[in-house]
Length: 469
Image (tube, rainbow, N blue to C red):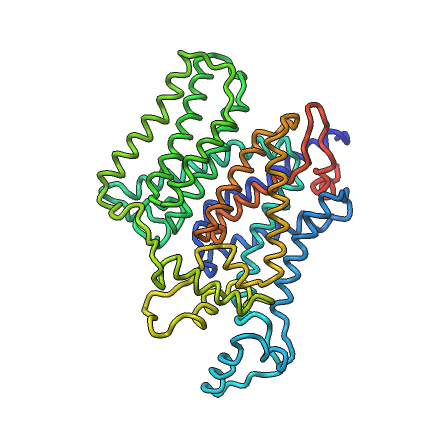
């Protein structure tokens, strides 16, 4: 087989791996609980994908852009590793709240040993670190993939997955027989779809909306008849309507608040220059009918009592109360953190013992504060750098149209904006499905642009190393 043919096949194969892995992660990674069997399977699969991509990295064209992105990732991984290394006992004992741990050990007649790691629970930190594997694998696979085939694949897969979880969510809130459609032990009864948490369901559905707009925009008259073309457009409109239904049925306050700006951005992405007024009628009616039906279902479903209700007081279990205690932890543990995945344990060391009940706090409901608690000053520095890079790229994607794939890259930018904003009041990226989709979106944003007739670069180098034809 000729060299050009080999390169073409290699590019297709490599660009198939990232989207395929993302689909698997979304289908089986809807719970934020880190100790599930499905998570272990996803981590093992992701480790194989990472080995496949990283072993031949010496052949990659190391541009400054790639060095910056992969360098930041490497620094983050190094800090996670350092958090599990044992410190001399004297130095470790000087860290905040370690005296309480030592006192507990003495009551149990447990020897402290030579020293302990920075993390207050190294086993949890190791488990949480393994949970990053799917995120890394998706990012690397898509970032190093061939834009032409990766974009084409994701443009359909993401909307279809959004419609799937929305449809499952609707089945869950029907008046009868909803229990068998619950894939996880949901926190709150409602339309959680493929997820354990209704807020995560809303986040995911919101993330898919701009991709549906990009799909509608990129669609061109490539079918044999006008009737078939119209049917495809109605189908795309139906996908959009179903995903909006998924947001509405989930009953997440944050989902409701983010819906309007996401719809506005999606409208900016959508361009249908060829649509005539008559042909546009069914395209516009389809999502409208679906949304009206969803509102009627939500209003009458006995499963959705208390829909959209949340607490804004300053109670110990309300978000404001949790944030107050979390800020106290940060003030104490700001330098080194308590270890990735240890927020729940750290919170127990600082909460008021007089108001402790059987209900406990396992997340800060603010991803930024939680990461600072767990990873300290290095996390804050990396977050500032990462958000600055994201903001620069976000503005750049909306300022230029010469990139061949600017529509899907804009959709990815809006999807990441949803996660960044929702993370202010929740913990969406703790679910592998949302974390994986976020990684794919960041990779699409970071992927080098391709102008009109510009050829693809050496991004198919990985598969060509393994295929000798």
